[in-house]
Length: 361
Image 1 (cartoon, rainbow, N blue to C red):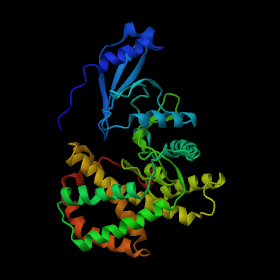
Image 2 (image 1 turned 90 degrees about the horizontal axis):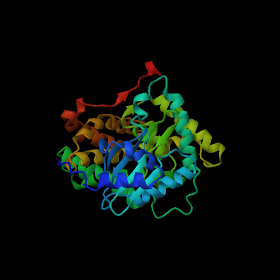
Image 3 (image 1 turned 180 degrees about the horizontal axis):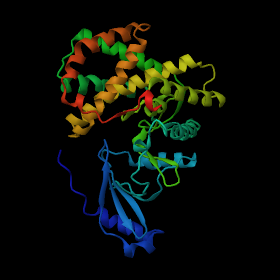
Image 4 (image 1 turned 60 degrees about the horizontal axis):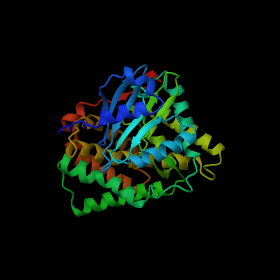
């Protein structure tokens, strides 16, 4: 992958925005350089700019590919709901430049352990409750609808199975995948809708000096299934927890939502089924997405996150194979046709995910 140069007008724009705003007093002491902070799975790039006793994040998000207007709109909606999100000091939508509050480099992921996770997840579930309480009645046309769910699941064969593993599907296999996808989509569409972040996991939760958590990377938010963000958190692609703990956390969220009247008529069994199948949809999608990031976007690091995602897929297929015929068919096909190809991949031994076992629970 060729790294594109930093736009020559990005730093002057950021400095001018500082001098024009309430940060004017800091500008004489400004370290007039942008220090790369991070990129992500998109074309966005983030830089840190030091100014006096404060620091800021300067984002370059090409407007041709990035949802900058959505970022601003969703940020305001979340802030109004009491969710901690970065303050926007300045924005130039035409050029895709944003001057943001610096929420630190400390994501939740490295702070999680068997001893700390319950406390942190209680706080995160409280954030999910606030997001679920947001009125989506007037939400724009961004919904987790049939078309979006199909597109996401289609990445599995388009990027993971065929180009990454080198396996060509015949018509019978394509029909099986389609029937399997139909079952997952049906489960997703029958759930109550709430505001869905779509990438709600430990790397997008930033720990603040106060101990509170802030949410980032929310520009892809849609109205969608109530279990989506919950399973993104609890079956995180970057850290894995024992199944019993995951179910306990999921049911704790269920109880809170029941208490608010948001899951009227939904019993625990139905909720956990939604939760499991939503996670399976997400992880089938992620297999394709991470393969695409490598093959199309030149970001091979995501391949090292595939092993834990595959383990989630295998876990849920095994759980439901005896009661759902299409799951049994898909499981047999996956194990017989894909697993031998997966085992031979170099990245299968490079997993970066932490597995927090029962001994640390």
